[in-house]
Amino acid sequence: MDQDQGATSPAADRHGRRVHHEVSRCAATTCNGERATLPVAFSGGRMQRIGFIGIGLMGQHMARRLGEAGHPLTVWNRTAAKATALLSAGAAWADSPKSLAQASDVVITMVTDSGASEQVSCGPDGVLAGGRAGLVLIDMSSIAPETSRGIAERAQAKAIAMLDAPVTGAPRVAAEGKLGIMVGGARETFEACRPIFQVLGAKIVYAGGHGMGSTLKLVNNLILGVSIHAAAEALVLAVKAGLDPHSVVEITSVGGARTGAMETRGPRMIERDFSPHFSVNNMYKDLSNVAKLADECGVSLPVAGAAREILRAARSQGKGDLDSCAVLTVLEAMANTIVQRKAGC
Ligand SMILES: NC(=O)c1ccc[n+]([C@@H]2O[C@H](COP(=O)([O-])OP(=O)(O)OC[C@H]3O[C@@H](n4cnc5c(N)ncnc54)[C@H](OP(=O)(O)O)[C@@H]3O)[C@@H](O)[C@H]2O)c1
Image 1 (cartoon, rainbow, N blue to C red):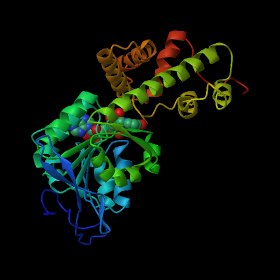
Image 2 (image 1 turned 60 degrees about the horizontal axis):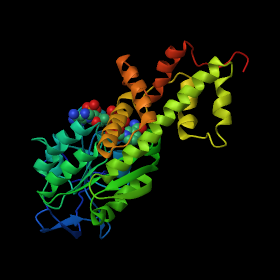
Image 3 (image 1 turned 90 degrees about the vertical axis):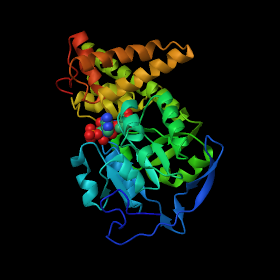
Image 4 (image 1 turned 30 degrees about the vertical axis):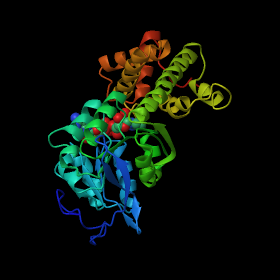
């Protein structure tokens, strides 16, 4: 196995020592019916080389954890400057997704949307252009299920195994390695990659074949998008009705109205902290993919549809890069009120 292909300093570990990779393999079937080989995460105590693409709010923490777990790490990000901290911690830099794939046993992508995933995986300089048979590609971005299936098909044609494995949890949760991970693809590939998922997540759910991880993620974010919207509506109503908004956060921490959305976003909405943890743009993208899936399945989603419309308004007001809890400001304008602490509370 050529460890020096493609990346600038890939064959040394985080302390500058040379690392030998003896990767054991398990069998998988390609679309041609051939038996390809898949590397497992550990072999004889040696760690697989991981290539990580997408050093954003989430990816920076996930990549760091994999490096800290001992995986020789190569990274690529469209905006190179965002990789500085990881490179200082010992990761290698690749000049393109293609060269990153040449230097890796497993490639993880964590980018914005379907278009970005297609580009880094299937573009002329993408992962599939550089990956050899036996590589595993794990796409952890939240994208449309049909895009996941399309990438998996093109990967299979090169005997590259693919998993769609989107996540749930904020950047803080990613930093702690406590994400929820939903996986679609061949079960044996999933099992081979489980040790990697265990570095990143606390709840790992196998959802079925290609695209089913992405499908489960859409269902999950339908609930999240609607919950954030409901929390914002409740705070606007509470303030207009003369309540202190903290009383809403407090009382909903117990009982049937309890939601993660109010627990995590409620205090930030009251403090008017709209710095991005999970952006309006990303939530709008997810609820748009939800709407498309519902259309394909012939399912009406009136509540998710309303939440998406408010996100659309937030984007039109130039708030796309703010946190998704900025939907509060759209609802405030509609009600002609501002959510703030009540004097004396
Ligand atoms: N934030 C959360 O709480 C959260 C939770 C669960 C799931 N997610 C999902 O995780 C994924 C990443 O989210 P994030 O919050 O980390 O977003 P982010 O901070 O905006 O990062 C997005 C990443 O994608 C890259 N990218 C975007 N378009 C690209 C393209 N055309 N080609 C190559 N790279 C491209 C960006 O590169 P640049 O640095 O060059 O812009 C950046 O590295 C999204 O699918 C999101 O829905 C996020």
